[in-house]
Length: 194
Image 1 (cartoon, rainbow, N blue to C red):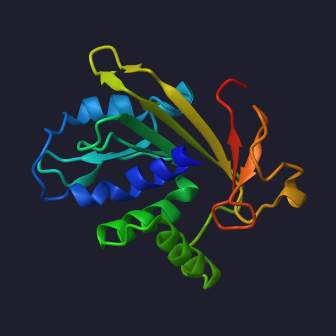
Image 2 (cartoon, one colour):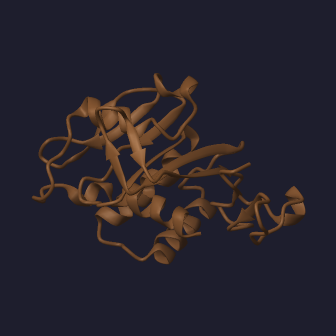
């Protein structure tokens, strides 16, 4: 789904902003407040948050455990933040590394990561792992309000298939479904209106 591709793109493009001039980087506290918005409140205070230093470097803004959140990419016009379970960090972090090194094709990034998972060099979660996102047309820091919010919820279940989960492998109305079935990034897609 395009939203998931955007997440991966934003998450792994993060390092690419290093050393570039452009939009100003918001203060760390503002980035943190926005970054934790997608997930349930009970996880927000303890989450690790990645964002941007004033010089554009991708950094850890706040240490934490359990969930990892990615602040808004300063050069992206649309608002987009995401949070995922810490067990997904090796997979997500590797995607960021590949993008920072110049690999931009999502299919190439996936094939590299899949090969590394198969070779035992890259870990994926052994239990289901949640990911939350919010997309919007704008953001108001003073009120932490997202304009035109659209949410996306997924649960990663690496290597799961329709047969192993009882879920369809193609979208069907508002029903949950399994995307990227049988791969290291297999995940259950949920409709925000559920």
